[in-house]
Image 1 (cartoon, rainbow, N blue to C red):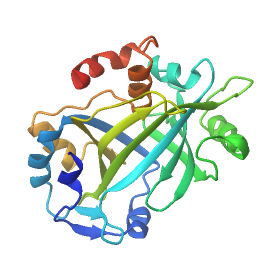
Image 2 (image 1 turned 90 degrees about the vertical axis):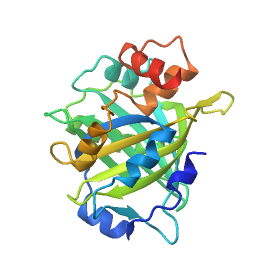
Image 3 (image 1 turned 180 degrees about the vertical axis):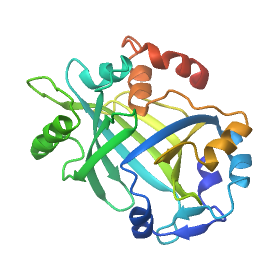
Length: 250
């Protein structure tokens, strides 16, 4: 299983408070790389000196559960599929090991960087009292949502994540055991032979990006929301991600 590779890394620890204070990175440049499971161990062996790993108690790998919300017409999905500058994504994210949940709104900044706004949220499955926050976040980002923002759960993703703090102060995450399901849980699929490495930097490419490039890995256009939706609903159009899906699922 892929989790055994990252369950315990021989890296200096960094606590959640220090990591958050040093590198909140809610406005950032993201690069995602989809790697075969067996490519991860050699990569971890070459991490830059001074890399630290988020550690809480004796744990370095944590369970995440995200519920993506969208309109009946899938406006959020299609805004990303069409690569619109004013695209958006709305989800609740539960941190399973700490029993906490946040409501998050992700939009695109003027330079194509990712802007994330979030607040604590009591309902992992729905929006409820969070709707005014969502509208305000979209408005601040210049996104014009549908007049009736009727959002409902569309997709659930579950995975295990290890978070790294790089020597330059930027962050990276390693996601394993990625699974997708419909909100009711009837249909389920996943990417058992793949891991997703995501670099998050305030500016340009960091040392981990260069390490990945030297090992022959290039950024992939992939979205957990789009990937899961297309895998569970093949009739949904999503041309920008089809090429990636053919490579990583085949």
